[in-house]
Image (cartoon, rainbow, N blue to C red):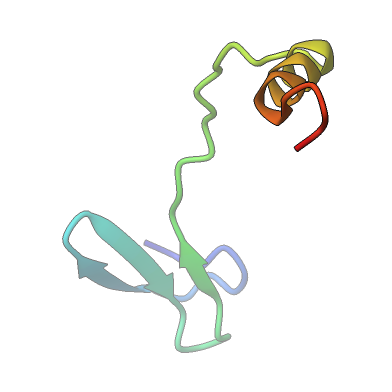
Length: 61
């Protein structure tokens, strides 16, 4: 695998299922990550405030 900065060969460090890439020539260090997001249904501000108020009691304590 070649360095995206300088084109020299990258050194690969691996541990379990993780990999890190490093270029000895230019110092590039890259870690491959998955940036995908698992979408969850969120709650609206109104729902969050109702939930908060319900947990506080009538007198705010």
